[in-house]
Image (cartoon, rainbow, N blue to C red; front, side, top):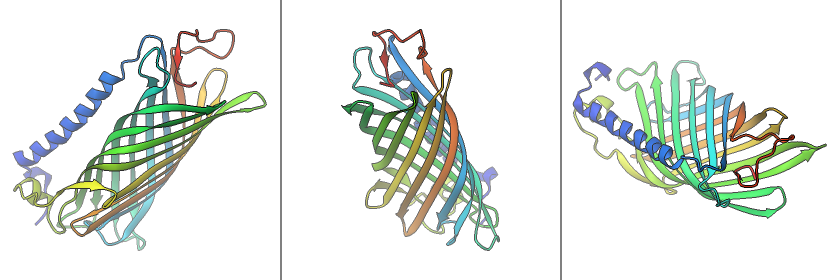
Length: 294
């Protein structure tokens, strides 16, 4: 039985609408909570990178596929109030895509991932120039994979929503009076819900005929393991901030006797913008401003 997008009926469209609603809810919450207090400074960063990706999806193939991935990351962070310099709000968005091949070069899988998130961190300042952030992030993950040589079931989709533990350590380093912000961040899921089909079940049967079966699973450390590591260096030039990053993004999960695994290693470059900007020259931010960078 061939999977055909043109044959999808209202059940499949209803599923797509549910996903769209979840996506809309996440960004609605983000827009509500991200209203910056009047006297806070918000840091927003964009990074674009290139690296390697490996994909293992037993629903599509028993082989590991590797290739090149293009990735874009966005981050926004600010304190939640004018007077509070302990609790901050963070918004994130990751988009990546690439083409992968098996070792024999007999088949290719197109890979596309999207992961928005929103979370909060508590700030600790144990010593001068060092800041530790501990908190949590709720995110949604959409991953689409298309196998070019599979006849019956060429498409596989990962969908999950997770509560993640989040840790960030940043240190302001001065190299001959040239400031560089070094930051390490780690995110790992604790609990959530994920979609995993049964082996051999086609997406046509699941979404057109409504035979979802045992496809929705509770996820935690027993069946889902992931960590997103990043090491960044913000070069604070006089008129701009350049961000250099190395990202290691690993994830594996299993259910219904199917195993899934992916890994990205990406080097990226981007920029950081501080809204309500005051340069480090003659014009400095007034004391009444709550600066997320301090």
